[in-house]
Image (cartoon, rainbow, N blue to C red; front, top):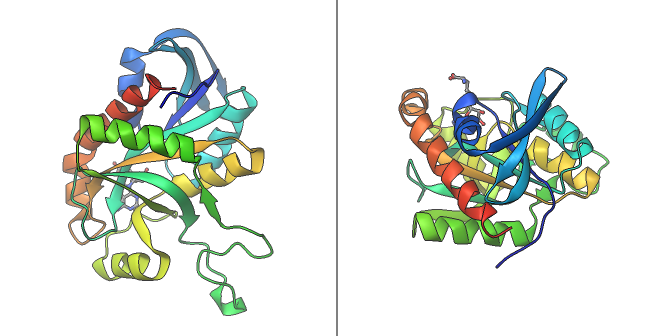
Length: 234
Ligand code: SAH
């Protein structure tokens, strides 16, 4: 499959998640806004703009809107997450079919967990074409190690097995992280296609902080390689 995008936005939350872009993108310029540096350049003959959003939903939302204002026509997220789907191991990959804020909670008012009150949708769907390109890139690089699934986001580092079980059973999540649903909501509000690629750094359980420190670099490298492979087909 080959698609055609004029200017591709790429976001990572942490330095580990974007450092290979710094190495491989042929830089043509940069600008700063809201304390975030946006680097413009070429990768595999495609125009890209990439940046480090910082951790959490507010950082991701601001960063995504500024990237869209800079004229990108799709947004890719590269990074790490905690596994929620029980079959996933550290190093496996989740390609977002949709994203939802697990910490949006107005249940005392009768809303479902994750539901944004008075809004038609609170599960934000990734662009099917980008999901396919990402999944094919995963199969090429890491056969049998990726799933398509729902990414759950919240302003919490999740390190609790009971919470993970609930996230899977009640919300149908595949992985949990801290930015995807914010980026997804901003993209949907602007009618810009997106996909989130997350390589598992931990299992969001009692060992998550140890695993996160140990596996973030390798998991970030894997996510970067998928984005890199995707660009050859965009
Ligand atoms: N850089 C800091 C904080 C990282 S917060 C540190 O080194 O401690 C965790 C980051 O990784 C977030 O960007 C989040 O999206 C992702 N992440 C990985 N595992 C996660 C988990 N179990 N729960 C929530 N976010 C997780």
